[in-house]
Image 1 (cartoon, protein in one colour):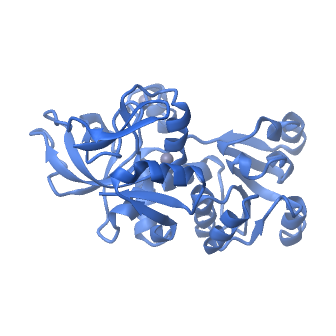
Image 2 (image 1 turned 90 degrees about the horizontal axis):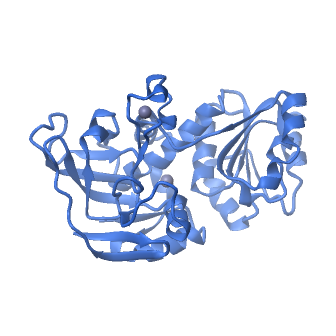
Length: 343
Ligand SMILES: [Zn+2]
Ligand SMILES: [Zn+2]
């Protein structure tokens, strides 16, 4: 089969690769769509703490069951499926406590197992038994279903922040994950949604999410803008999707007392300076979020299927697998929202 194989840092080869063969309780899916994630770019440039080479990247994927082992009863050839990216063991302390994102034996698609930048992908037995393979609702296209994985991470993030109806949120970073956060919090009944980014083009692109205000911290005072349209208060939540979207901004200084700052994506060290006092004196919380659980993936598919999020709004460019490098460079340059590899 054809695959985009990462053979080492900055060594991605579009080449022939042995097609997977399912064992008795495994299956093989034919990949139909796989979107490019910032993590794919990072892994291409710098590697990943879990990765073993050679590895096929791509973890935001949807495909069609091509072949099942004789022991697979819950799926059959032709089924349209979405596969979660982080596979919990179901047995460790965290899994038993239902904290699957913190599974001690977490297996990650595109790090421990081959991912979706290939014609076919192996779906081992424990992906199925852990509930990581979801049937795609009929009204969703392949590419819309592929967006369930990144959206699932956003659902986890809002859950980790304990975001509630009627609250306000500042989202730092207006790329696809920032836009998902904006739309999901609107869907969850946010009182006010603010998006902040120094990239004016990106900020403009995020306009479709219907946030209350779009803030460019280079030309505007974020605190002032938030207070002015939020009855004088700061935001109840700050979601740091991309710290580099707002250099110099300290999230804990923009969150209201008893509010929550969530380190969802990359942040800059200096953005957390002065944190202990802000946390203690303002009873603020600093939390993190990491990936998503199988349940979050199901919730995301449902949100897409119900039209709470229109996946089509997120797809900027489509590429064949042979165009993988162009898709990665385009993602790295932050052009548009999601770049999709279609098969
Ligand atoms: Zn991703
Ligand atoms: Zn576990």
